[in-house]
Image (cartoon, rainbow, N blue to C red):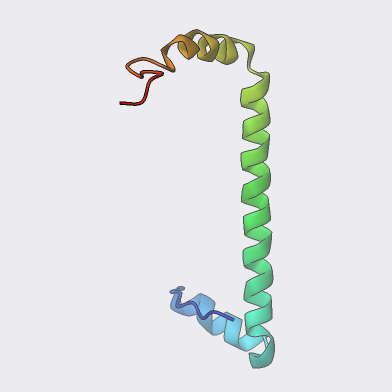
Length: 77
């Protein structure tokens, strides 16, 4: 288990201590972090899907493929 040092506004910390029992605080924070990471991963996934479906962008990217080997030799020297 790893410890993290985070900063939160004083009022939020006070409410957290008031409403969440001491022995449940790490579990609650871990759960909230997991939810936020899942939300961000889903947003990133949806963004990637949108890029894959963007016909104009994919056409432009295909046009740039001709530059992939610019300046590279097939021979090792």
